Length: 588
Image 1 (cartoon, one colour):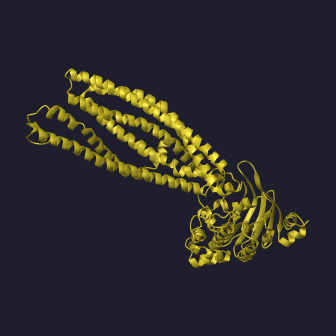
Image 2 (cartoon, helix red, strand yellow):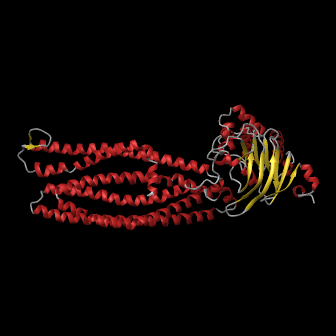
Image 3 (cartoon, one colour):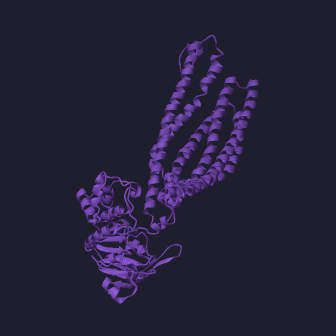
């Protein structure tokens, strides 16, 4: 019930449209009930008056047989046309409502996925999240259009049809209901099975998408090691498992359809036998029997629809639960209820006994205590696994410390809205990610209102102007998916230009020169030396000649701060930094 109420909540904004659609549904139901009556009038009245003098309902005078037959047939067509027009309007309204709700839940799901911290995305495949947004979210529309709307329409048709049948023959009307207990039994028998098999199929389809994404995104590695056939085998295995899940669900649907169809055929046979006896006994006319059988089809059709609807809703429930599973995931890096506004301008950054541990239990940082003054440039160095990048990730609140606190302007970062905090920071990642747009759009991504002159200036500072001008369309050149049309060094320089353009009071650099050749690296380090004198800068790097340019160096070992000071001071101590320097320069 809670699942149904949550789904219905997405339709609350469209209550007025739903009421209009229900009104149209009622009119369509009445018109549908009128469809058999022209046939009864032809059989019981017109064909029994070959000489003419036929009185037509709602029309004055007596009519000849051809005229009466023409008018009745015209009424039959008119009823169908009118019903079709109303049904079209009602169907359009219901589909539009369902699609608007789908738009709402997809947007909410995608927005929530964007807001969840990296800890959530670290343990999930991006393709699974994409599958939930693109496909599982459609359950919201399915529940309404093939669920609630179908149920309401079926109930209206059932009520109206049974009322007319009861007026015509109480005995036959009651007999027609004899099939319902067997239908309910069949529905309950297959409902749980269909939900389980649909959930399994959705999971397998997500795995197929994940395998395809992984294989195609790693195409260079696949080609380089000649593993094409291996990747195809892995993909075939996932597809085979999806095929088996799909086949199980399809066979369950076929079996349930066969059971329902057989029950309804048996009910029709019983009614035909009993109705023929009523006609033979003179208690009903042939026209009455034909109309009654038409109404029986109308009665059984929604019953059949309700059976399939129940199973469709079970399948949709499995997908909806996958959507709500994400929406119910707690945000482990939540925005504060009453966020504190950060003061304008640069501020001191303070780490107070900061520790961090991943969910699997690995401790990455321990007892970090240091201060970065406004405008100071600080480099963080250490061996692989020392916790450098994790430390950097705590400042934009990609993660929150599991111990201690980080302060900016004397305010705990957990008291600041993430949007406000990140607006004060510019970040260059070790692996620059570019969007599938132009060079200009990628540089301006962090500052959409920037002028072209400002974009050019940022590109020049990042030593990117020369190669950008050499591209086919210059700044308007498409970079391809994830920047595939550019080299690693070119992507890195665009990422650095993006950070420069943002011109934030805090600059965070994670191995900014890792993908550059020595000449470009030296040029860029000269630029970074000038730029790092303006904002507060935290540089994570394993290139010690880059760290040497910073005002201060922090040396990490296994998540602990073991040394700090200027480069020359640390070399003179011949401690941890000196050992890193010796290893980097090949000295013994």
